[in-house]
Every structure is written in C-alpha cells, then in structure tokens.
Image (cartoon, rainbow, N blue to C red; front, side, top):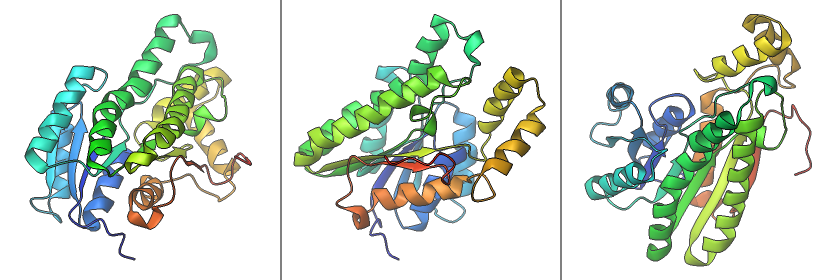
Length: 263
C-alpha cells in the first residue's frame, strides 16, 4: 500500500533508538525525508549511518535537550531551515524513570513531567502553530499505556502520560479547523533498551529477578509475545499518512489486549 508519504519532511524526536528509530526507518521506506532529534550526538550519528545505507541523502540529525524549550525550538528551526517545513511530527523522545511508589519523591514527580510531558510540548508548541499557519500537518505522539492504567512502578510517568493524552485530544480539536491532525499511540511493554529499566524497577518492588518479571510479562500477553518497535512504528506511520485522513484526536492502545478497555 502506498501511504502517500513520499517527499514529506518527517521530524522524529527520540529517533536514534527504539521506537523512534523504527519509525524513522519505516518513513524512509515510504519515501519520506527524515530529521532525527535526540540528546546524544553519538547515537544520532550511529542511527544516521545505519539509515542512510538504504536512504542516502534523506536523513538529517539535530542534537537537542528537549527538556529545554529554547533548545527544542532551535532544533525545530534548524530542521526546517535545512530540510524544509515539517509535514509530520512524531514524538518518541523522553521517558520518565520508572520508580516504585515507595521510592517516589516530589523531585521524581517533577522529573517525570520534564522528561516526558514537557519534552513533547516543547516541540509540539512551535510546530503545531506553524502547521496551523500553513493549513496542514500531522502530529503523532508515542505515549504509553501507563497513562491509562495506573501501576505502582510508574505513577509519576503515568501521570505525565495521562497529561499528554489530554493534550493530544485537546490540540486535535483546537487545531483541526486549521488542517492539523493530532493522534497518539499507547504502547505497553515493548522490546526496547528502555524496557530493561522498567523491568528492573518492577523486580525490586516484587522481590524477583528481572528475568522472572520478563518471563511473567510475556506469559500474560494475550498474543503470546511482547510488542516490537516495528509493531508500534506500523501504527504511527499509518496515523501520519493521508490514508488515516479522518482520524484525529484518537488515542490508540497497543498492549495486545492485555488490559481490555472500551475506550
């Protein structure tokens, strides 16, 4: 299926690893031009080298601390100056540290909001306004099931996720008349480097080994496996495409039916 993304400029935050990298790879396969934004220049360079093997000249990289509003805006400005107006924004950067509830402090709650909520908002804010002025644009936020289902090791991060879900729905309604669509996907446990941190926190709380926790999580999965970054990327790229042109304000749960929910 041609998703009609050829030639579009897609900016992916957190694009050097995990779900963000999988999204970048799939957008490139669809013929898009991709700008990666991340904190580590070394990781960005490594990702660009891998991606450009099959998409020469269509990958740009911009290092930025997205928890800082000015740094985020400068990255957006640099990407648009070098590659052109951003047609699609995929937010996949930032992950709140998973912390057992009895280890939480006010600083941990603030840190979760900075790491997840504000790292997204700092990129969304300038781009949604520019997209609105241009009369077109798409934003897809990779958030997480922790914002829908509270867990004792992810309360601070889950609160940040819940705030992002509300922002997603609200921005979709506010900017829809200006031609901007905003959607989100909520992955559950996904086989990325970040998953190990969550498994370790859960293991501490339950007095188990990380291997035991991972084995139990896999056994509970109705589909018999945990999600891969490519699973999540497939949904992100579809939501970004004109094929989903009447989908906006949607929050797509991607936990393989582990938590049966009506909404």
